[in-house]
Image (cartoon, rainbow, N blue to C red; front, top):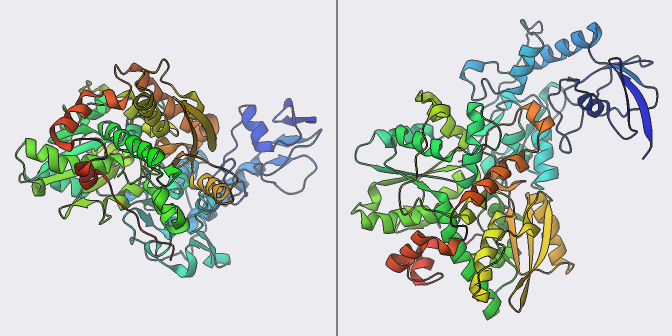
Length: 578
């Protein structure tokens, strides 16, 4: 690859000729502001905040799409550049709903941060503003086009990364909006509720529908027994809301904070992840031995499940019939736990703390209920939990560590790694390998299915069987793999699919990532590292060795994939493609 020499702010550097000015500036530690730019997702120069001066050019080009050339001289901080950036930002703000103090993104808004950094103190372009109704139709997503800055991030992540394509630019000029086909409400289009549009939105034009008030009311109601569970990925992201280093595991402090919020019991979804492995692992073995539908595909990710229901209903029989872990936990709490503690299941409120907004939709599915009671009553995101902790004035960083409540709080390392792409596959293989061979694994890490590649493949030797597996994250990658299977180009026995890139660690309900962190960190890898560290530190690292899992089968469920398990822990899916 050819090299060229360019000069930026009097610093000379040799770089690849395919580099952009923005990439080179960041390599030199020069901060050029951006608002719409996301590497490999949105590189369209829509916001024009990254303009620079280039010697020999009469206009101010955008650094994010400007390729370098030999001898190029760039200035990023001249008076002309600063004034142009401020003018552009003021124009954006002139048509923006600037109710910052009551905005969900107050203090964590890229537009607000940039306004502060560029010293915006007055808006000189007051005029007509967009005034459209807020779309509250979805149980997961709120759309407020009055806050939209038309950066295009959500459009590109929905179309190019997730391959869903329900968002696009509409109309022209001042009437331009981002929306759905024919201005339909988001509930009326095949949105999979993955929340990746929320994750990339720099403002609050897209946000989760909050259920905080519902939980506060439940905690105040003395007739209710309020149980909470926390997903694996929450513990390595929650700390970011309190300025801790990305990937820091805050499990003990998280448990303490939940008790101080007033929950009656604090359980760990990792226990239900171990339970899922028992059910899913034995389901896979049954299909392998009895000629069941293959490949079997995991069913833990509700965004992926909805994608399959809408776009690939011919693969519905391939899906594991297992409920996702937090739904299994809800079913167990309202049956086994309720019986053991003489509590009427109708008086239990099951709250899930999840890294995912699709879980909000999932919890309301009619088929995820037992005896007319929903398994889970309410889902809060990691961000919503952080808001409750802050509202309660709890000093999270300095809290002591406490343990989850017993039985349904006991988990293994296998349950922990569910939050990272490849984690479900690895956890399943740890158990299936020992069940098939009857021997202890010498090495329990399956490195073949780890990492952040979009599609990973491996052939795993299980005794005299060779099991072909694949791990996929992001529904765009799932689409690629499923098309290859349909074309007869690929053949597998078992596939893990997660709806979000990176798996749950970068789910749509996780803490928003700052512009600086997006530039300097591999977020999915940093958060996953925290989960793998917690796995390594666990005394027990295989689901079938969890003594509390053994206990629940002995006392209540009977056996994996048995009658009782199917009644409580398994489900069916809906063809939404017709």
